[in-house]
Length: 261
Image 1 (cartoon, rainbow, N blue to C red):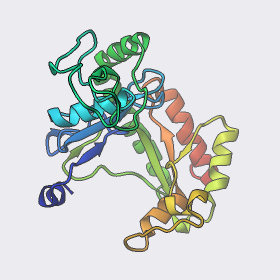
Image 2: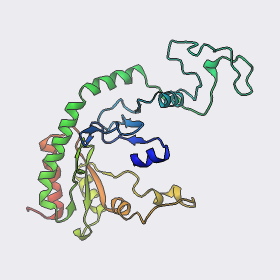
Image 3: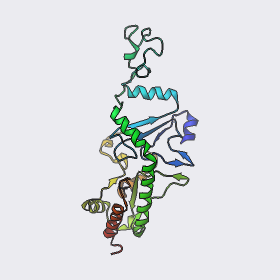
């Protein structure tokens, strides 16, 4: 993908929302592209309650991103600074009156995406604990994978991409076609035992109600996308989980499949 972007002069945006702290070929994810994004939704590696962050070392892209964050404002002065450009009252912008205060010129549609001081404080505190969180998530993943080796006749267990060092967001499980049970029945059973699950987000997006009647183009038949949509779900590896809770999850999966009983 990076080679393709370089060939055609495209900016590469890395979505790292579920992979904060992971590495590929010894290099942190988020450092391959021009922009990286992370999410601070409560289920993710670190949280501020909501929101996210954009990273870049490209000064041009930083100004563009900050403008979208600040209502589409054309002015790039830092908070507390004025007239960085030296022409605050000496420019013509569209059909606005000449000299219109550059601080209140909007060159495109933007949003109000600034975080509060309280959120920032939470984020900084969480950031200090990120190595601890990653270590516990990876330990929980390894424990769950070992415990679920007993049911691999029915489910496919996840494998890390070659040359990668994951920072596991969750534990994805794919029900085998030959399992003889439906995913709905399995996740209902887990839910009855107070074990939370999540589908792999929106699945095959082209099958979402929004796409009905919408013209779009796809490459290939999306076979693996459909397998994920129909047969895959997440289990949690949240750092607050211990071996007691994870062992209970594995026990209930064995019970559902009739293994070791």
